[in-house]
Structure formats: C-alpha cells, structure tokens
Length: 498
Image (cartoon, rainbow, N blue to C red; front, side, top):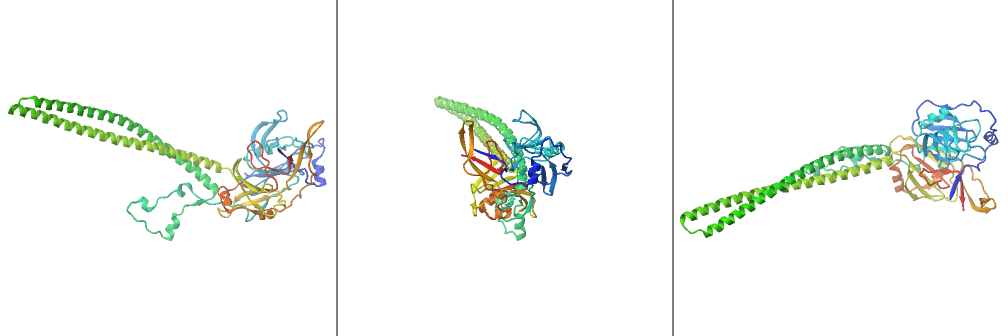
C-alpha cells in the first residue's frame, strides 16, 4: 500500500518558517485578497505557497487573482504536490471532522484535502485543507472546472512560458462529415469517365483539417445530426413496414381467393369433361358440350391469370416489406453509429493529462479520469533525477497545429521506504533507510524535456486529443492513484510501506 504526504523535506527560509508557525493567538492582519473582475481566459490553474500563506491563480493572460489562505497547522500539514480539482460541492460537510461545514468545497484528494471557504487568519490553522476567504471562495467556485490543476509548494513557484520541441503538438484531423465522403465521379454518374483535376481543383477536394478541440465539437454536432437523421429514417421505415405488412396480408387474401377460384373452375372443367365423355354422340349434343367445355376453359384461363397477377402483387409487396425491414436495420445501425460518435465526442470533451514517470519509465495518458493508454518511453540517464515539472497548454499557438505552454517546477518529489513494525503500542512504521532530501530543483524544465524520447506513433495518438487545457507532468515517482477515479496526482514525499 502506498500513502503519499507533503513536501516535508524541502528546506525553507527561516523567515518563512516563522510565518508558517505563528501563534494562533495572533490577530489576523488586514492583508486582502486580489480577485480580479475579468473573466478567466483559457484554463485556470493555481499555485499555493505554504510559506507565504497565499494562493495565486493564473489564466492564459497571466495572473488572474490572488488571495491569502490558511493551510494546515502543525500536526495537520497540508500535503504539497501537483493536484487537480476532483469534485465540487457548494454545501459540503466534512466526512472526517464531525460534519464541519466546508462551503464552496473543491476537492484535491480523496483523503480529505480541499479548497473551501473558512476562517483565514494570517497563519496555518486548518486540519490540512486550504481555507479561502468567503468572497474569493465563492467567486473561484463559479469559474473553475473539474480537472484544473493546483500546485501546492513550500514557496511560491510562478509559471514561466516555455517552448520546446519535445512538448506535444496537436494533430490536425478531417471534419467528420467531409473526411468520410468516398464518392467519386465514376460512382456518382455511371458511364461517365472521371477527368483529371487541375491542381486548384485537387486542393479544393481535400478535406478541411481542424484541431482536436474543433474536431471534438464537430464530432458532437455530426453525432447529433446523424442521430436525428437515423431516428427519422427509422420512423419512416417502421411506418412503411407497417403499411406493407397490411398490404401483404391483403395480398395473401387476394391470392387465396384467386387460387380458390382456379381450383373451383378446374373442378368444374373436370366435371364438364367427364359429362362430355358420357353423352351420346350426335351433332347437336356434341356441339353443346364443346361450347360448355370451351366456356369453362376460358373461365379457368381468366382465373389463372388473376391468380398470377395476385401472386405478382404479393411478391412485389413482400419485396417492398423486406426493403423496409432492411431500412429499419440500416437506420438502427446508423443510430448505433451516432451513439458511438457521441460517446467518442464526449470522451474528447475533456483535455487530456499526460504523465511521464522516471520510476516506471512509462508514459500514461488519461482523458479526465479515464485511462486511455500507457506505453514505455526512453529516458536518458535514467539513474539521474528529472525533478517534478508541470506543463499546461494555455492557448492555441500561431497555427492550429501548435499550442502555447507554461511550465511550473515545484521542488522534486522523493520516495521513502518504510516497513511495518509491531510494538507494545501497536503497529507502526519505521524507516528502512535514512531519509535524504532530494535536490529542490535537480533539473530545469527544458533539460528534463531534452531527456525524454517519445515514439512517433505515440506522439500522433496524443496529438489527436491534444488541445488547450491539456497537461504534461514529468516526475521521478509514480502517480498517487487511489481507489477512486482521479487524474494524475504527484505528492512530494512518497512513503512506500514494505
């Protein structure tokens, strides 16, 4: 079992430690929040500084808002690391501390750490959560989305713009309604040979390429349109099938009547023929019998003609019914395809998260909380720490096939091995080896990216779902996954129980 706790090993300046452990009897200072009035542009992400007792939220334009906070008091330290917003609840009550109210709660871990409205003195006073002033908590709750990133660090770690060839790029995709059009000139008009297109005409025939975010929106619209068309087609086909079934029943009755008439006239002809054979042969009688037989034969021929026509009508109606039933199946298949497209569009509606872990030498991709795939990657000098680096795509670049990124580098995460130990006081844990703090910043963000080698086919798979709001994490440790669905979470100090 793995439990993850905060950045306890990173050294802090003396003045920062003094601020961190001020007496709770000290009156709060009048330091004020700095919530800006403008709406956020692009994804929001926040950085909580434990030393400064302050949170800063950024968007695509830079600093969006700042506020003072109150984090965990001594004995209830707020864990530091890279988190995401897992859940939001306007009227939440604590599951741990006797139902204590936690208004405007935004959960960061499933073990009891969240952003929420609370009393905010100028010192750490919570039981591990990040308390926010009332007005700021309410305003922030209204603009954040699930999955947006929150970094908690011993000191402030502001984001910096970064451009690097190893950062993933979007892959342009054909619009759903145009990319699947396979009709050719020969298919459209039988007997007409297609002519060679000029260069200009060839360019016009190419499908329009869009970024993954636009593709997700177009796919959703195409799914809705296809679903509506399939529903209408199925409704019309069901109505037609019902009509043809009624016509088929009537045609069956008409065939039965006609065939019964043929049988009746056939029996009458047989009787007339037998009677003719028994009659004495004389000219008058023979002529009368022949006339009767000829009349019955004419009626039989007419009955057989009508029976054949009735059978032909029945065959035609049966063929039309089969066509209507095939149309129902085709419409149902189109409806299933529309549902598949809608699910695919829904899965693309959330920005992806990518984690590259030096511990496992693997790359993991999730769409929200849903794992998509993971593959091995090559990390140069794998014995040397990468550090912890968070990259966030904040806006579209100069063209659809690029993104602008920012990087945040908190102190590096470390892993400490413990083992269970029994004593008179119960089961405890003890270290298997002395704890040694990792270097706060063992590698710059650019240098860490330089050491990563991602296969081209994996870059393409990532690029198909990559757009603004997507994140990339480089870390020396693995994600702190729990039993509940969650995005990647990296805590600075990982305790591994043997």
